[in-house]
Amino acid sequence: MCATQGKKPGAAVAFIAERCPRCRKGPMFQYPKYRLDKLLEMHEHCNVCGLRFERETGFYYGAMYVSYAFTVALVVVEFIFLNAILGIKDANVWYAFILSSMLLMLPLFFRYSRVLYIRMAGRVSYDPRAEFHPEKAVADPYRKSQIPT
Image (cartoon, rainbow, N blue to C red; front, top):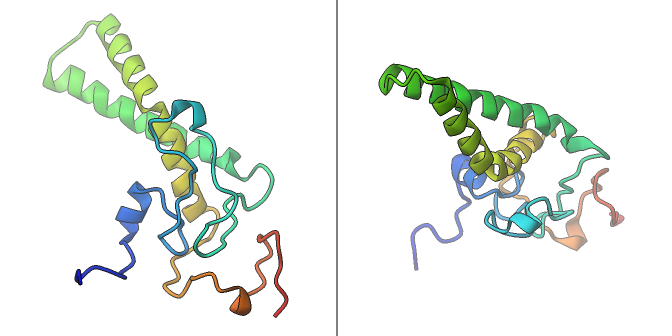
């Protein structure tokens, strides 16, 4: 038996793997990152703990600000890399390099901004006991199907 079997992944691993913030096991998105035609499709609920990912209508509009911050950080790092390290002063090279990298990073920024936003603004924290057991389900105001206790 593997020593790590049954352990929950760490916060960084769960973030990179786009897992549920409560149980760190269930995937948030229905398809992998490389499926650009299905990039936007998220699960409604975590299939492990039952957490509803869309906390309210329009909840992820705020994730646009997180995505914007990711983009600004990328542009600043690329500007420093091109200007200070490589010594490239041509603005056309900057524009081409920065715009192409932004287009390549767009799918990742979209998904990771949602993953980070639900952890920050959704006020969802890790719960090691978050396993979905219908007979012990606690009333969650964001869960569609309420199970009476």
